[in-house]
Image (cartoon, rainbow, N blue to C red; front, side, top):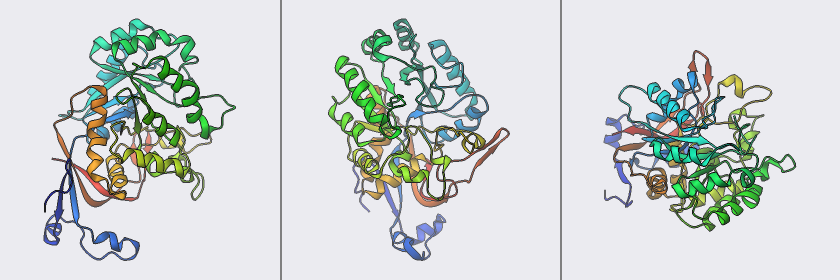
Length: 387
């Protein structure tokens, strides 16, 4: 069979090959019957990177790092730990060492560190970060916007402009959690208002500053990114914001494991993000925002925001691209656009996605408690496998 996709190797299995590989080939009753008639396939992709990842520290780090390391070659690691947060280059280097020690033996996973921007961050720290070889970006959390963001920025124009100017000079990207925290702004409008009042003025004032708008959730964010100069403003996109709308928060009762920040939005926004990501645009790339929390901290009166998707992310991205007949554009999104934006070499290692049903574990149990993955207990069609 000739390959119909220019950038993705595709193999179709016949019935005998499926049996040899133990793929199911029997009749499937009900709504899945039509789907069962499609040929079994595998995609060979350049190994992806995760350009937005939470690994936490301590027991949580030890528990979850292997899931990301098994699928991704590199990851931009977020700095919003519990105190002490990662505000200095020295702290970032020490955190990097903790991650490397927690990795499985023979892992080739590379953590790319970030600094937590505060009102007190200095331009000198940006110089140190750039020269460290370990820090690749600076993260902007508006104070109070999300998990462990209480020490974030209170006034970006009044207190952070010298730092941002130094970042532009040093070609150090600014990673933005794009939400205002004004209590008078509706939670579903926080991203839109942030674009209008902070991000648009910032890009106009510092056009040479590289900006990544993280985990975009709205059509407003899509339009903003597309309106900016390519190569200077980009966006990461999560599996949850591609597959779920805000109805997922309330189906069958309140669903704490579908709660993340920025919060899920209306279906019209989800569709706009899917369209942008699967269009082939270089402005969008993979960032899982995988954010583990122990089950009891999710299922409580004031549950934490965050969805743990490290194990299922590649399966879910493939699902999205397949549903709109865009598998030929999956590799660029997962493996090329992010490294190109950061000015890093593309990976040379490969990974396979095989279309074979597998069931997501209901939970992962550790000495400190359980972590519930995204789509727990559900069957997914694409399974990652190393070559």
